[in-house]
Length: 98
Image (cartoon, rainbow, N blue to C red; front, side, top):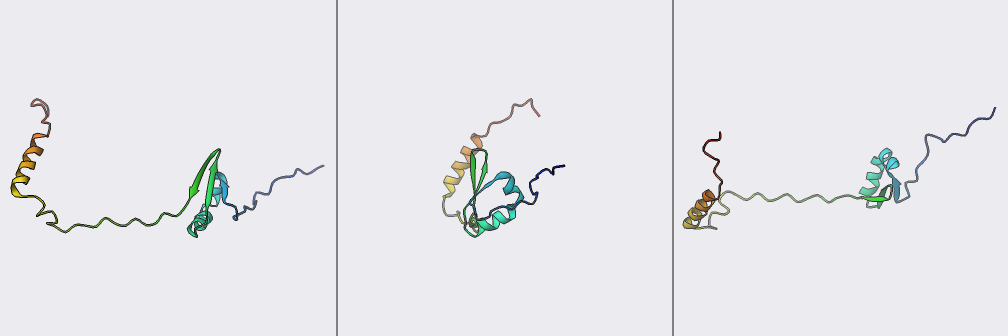
């Protein structure tokens, strides 16, 4: 009786490559992220589409302005005028709805 040749389920993947299929990338995602973290190019393919895995630099936080930062930006008259315009621009609901 002839034994059927089967593929080794523990196939090795070549991590020196730059391109990986989606199924291999899912299996070895942690290793691919480490590779991308070292600055190496990692391309993941799914059919004819290609995706690039790369590290994103941290985003600088938006500075918090102290209270009163805009206090001297407007005069009292300008503030009153803007408040009147803001009140006039609000659409009032019909009186019968609640």
